[in-house]
Length: 143
Image (cartoon, rainbow, N blue to C red; front, side, top):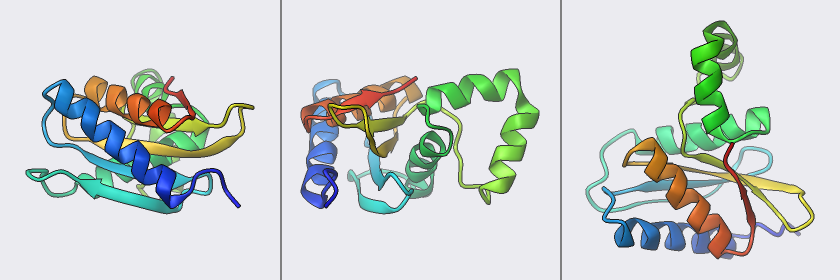
């Protein structure tokens, strides 16, 4: 059985929303994916705009695709746009290469999944993801 259960995914989301409230962020949408890129849980706060599911899951999916947080994808898109175009093509357009996609690892470093958050600035999205992951007892890998 996976360590990243539905209960843990919901705990990540609740903690991310709490961080957003404390920091007075705009309404967030949060997707939690398992290590294979499958959705475990998704929630969006009241007032979130459309396409937030696609953006949040795309940030998490991209992090899983390359084994790095989506901040790395953001930087790579600037430095090597041809690589990002190819990566997005082979993924069927599923990757959103901006910060806010954070890997979830357990205490021994095993990959469990990823969180993708959208709704505020990319830096704040990433901050909320890290807060949620750590509050649930996991290690967050953003970069």
